[in-house]
Length: 109
Figure 1 (cartoon, one colour):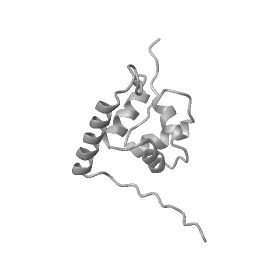
Figure 2 (cartoon, rainbow, N blue to C red; figure 1 turned 90 degrees about the horizontal axis):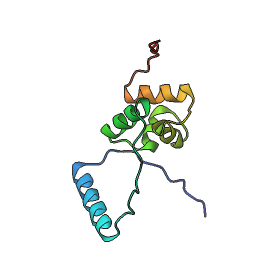
Figure 3 (cartoon, rainbow, N blue to C red; figure 1 turned 120 degrees about the vertical axis):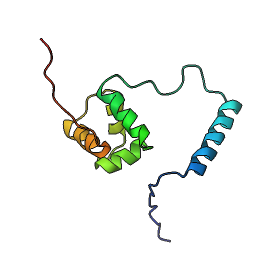
């Protein structure tokens, strides 16, 4: 028997789906509360925070943004948001996908 390759469908959730998922998450968090201090840390200030804010405002996941940017690995998006070293070309691709502009600015001496 031949295996079929699964195709990933990337679409935005409807308002009803978002509401239903939020209710499911709230009920799950009430049944099994997260450990104190669990969850993602805030992004460092500057470019990482702006990328994360812009991505979340558009309702994109790391995976969706990586696909939009032409980056093969969603971990690169995570690394950008955590302030880790990444290739400038990847950072530029993410900025273009989010409609952001990267500028080099001289530091005040």
